[in-house]
Length: 236
Figure 1 (cartoon, rainbow, N blue to C red):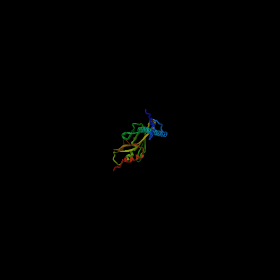
Figure 2 (figure 1 turned 120 degrees about the horizontal axis):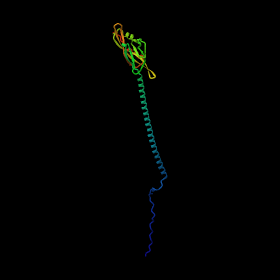
Figure 3 (figure 1 turned 30 degrees about the vertical axis):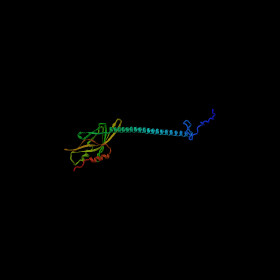
Figure 4 (figure 1 turned 90 degrees about the horizontal axis):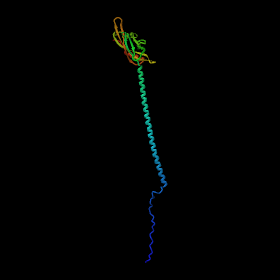
């Protein structure tokens, strides 16, 4: 046998790498990086919460505004309806208290009997145009207008003209009556429709035909203005 010396075996220890390998995923995270990441996450969460709170506040405020507007519109509509009803009630009350006199000739037109279908008239005060020089007259219980109150004034104003003439004379009539337990009065200007006619022995006569409502006013100046327009014109 030949005695041979064995060669030494190679060293199994690996040589160190020149490039370091990345840390495995299971290794603990750097505390600074972890703190920074958590701070970022908290900031993002807070911003998200702020956005939701802001949105909720906007929605809440919008809801309050809509509710307030709806409430105001409802109140405004009710107020308008109530005002309209008050106006209607006032108009109805006003219409109920108005007097509309009608007249029927009596005794051949020497007198007019007055009445109102809606009220029991107890008395009337009749005011004539001041230019006629006729004093105011009052009639009670059976309201009437007598031709004798102003016949001379009309006949004088139509003298030296044709015997048969027609015209209108405005008068201010105030009617008094009771409405349940309340005394009321209503004033208006009426036109008395008159006619003159000749007679064989006693000259001309004045006949009354009726009355017509002219204006709902109690202004004496308006009475004078109407008479200036309606008074008989001198004949040529």
